[in-house]
Structure formats: C-alpha cells, structure tokens
Length: 79
Image (cartoon, rainbow, N blue to C red):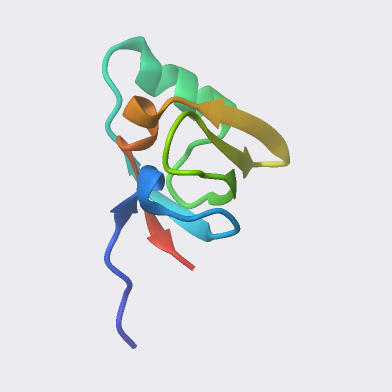
C-alpha cells in the first residue's frame, strides 16, 4: 500500500480532507496551532479554498480561518 505524499494545507481544494503530518509555523504560531487542534494525526477538512484570501477549515469540530502564509506551513496527507 503506497502512502500519499504530504502537501501543504494551502494546496488542498475545497471539500478535501487530509491527515495532519506536521506543523512548521514560526514562533508562537506553532503552539497556538497545536492548541486549536492542528496536531499530527488529526483530520482537517477544507471548507473554503478559492485560491486567494484565507482558507477556512474544520478541525476537531471547530471552524478556523487561516491565512495562506500559515496554511502553507501545515503539511497533510490527502485522504
């Protein structure tokens, strides 16, 4: 069984889901993202990704809006 290659959260289209692999955010962002549920192993669902502006996702039942700069630092395996 082959594993999907991890991609940044920014690359997932609306409606896609992924399993979080790693978070490479600067400074306090890393801790804040962990507190919000962006923990390796958790599933994240992209609700809105239009290619511009923020990305809206659901993680651990919460809806979160992320800037693209932060979203590109969260790596997921597409499901």
